[in-house]
Length: 378
Image 1 (cartoon, rainbow, N blue to C red):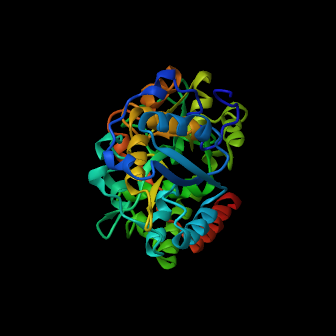
Image 2 (image 1 turned 90 degrees about the vertical axis):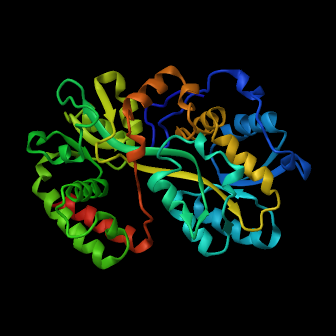
Image 3 (image 1 turned 135 degrees about the vertical axis):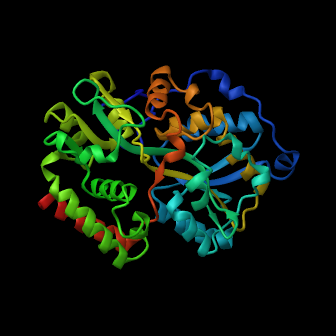
């Protein structure tokens, strides 16, 4: 397996081998109840990540004695459909959707809350299982989802021509007159960045987050963000929708700053570019584990989620998904190159300031696309 592909996608921040074969034999403290019943776990997750079956599940079994029966699904809609069937068959214990979907799974009666006393929430990096992410993961007092992997969209910058540092770097830099003709952006993310910047400056009539709740508020706030972004349209040298376009903006079109995936920053790290979380907080996404409402292997499920929150488990899981580890110390299990990049990108309190993409319903996605098109066409 190649350590890093030249054209990584948003899941490809940390595609690397985990150092140390000793991980397979790492001991884990597990409850006797977890092994007292079937000693198995029925897990439904993402297809296309062979490292799970090849390395991760064997490591979990070696550490706990629990066997994972893995069913692959191509997307969250397929997972949801299988989970609905499992209400009759009891074929699934744990599923891995994204944070923004967890509430919908709960309101449809598919999942129950985790028993946090059987987990180890202190294992997680600050900001991933607590703060705003923890609040969104909790409904009616029930902890519905615990994190497994995550990624971000932050500032890529030229260290020589556009130097910056944590605490100074801001989403507002993307729209500064000083950066005319120097910026790489994804249209809809740029509008969200403008909205969040205006919000931080107290220049919106309502909180930016309210724009994700209903169409009227969305139009009100996105109209403002669009108008302001159009005023600085001359800053944009390249719009991107994928990794190759983002990199081309810097390598070919002379950009010195941009709002891009962390993978873009990693790919350009040896060409004079850095990647930093803005002071308003990097845009962030995550996925995690939910517990089926009729799960059979409940204790095994808790041991599974807890193991993935450890340094060893999270580093293996992140490697399989080419994403960021959720457990404290997980990044130290990655290659030194990846570890150094991660630590320089998220210094200080950066993780506690991550801005998790809110729930985005179908109506919102449609309108978001319309606003993005207006920005690009302006």
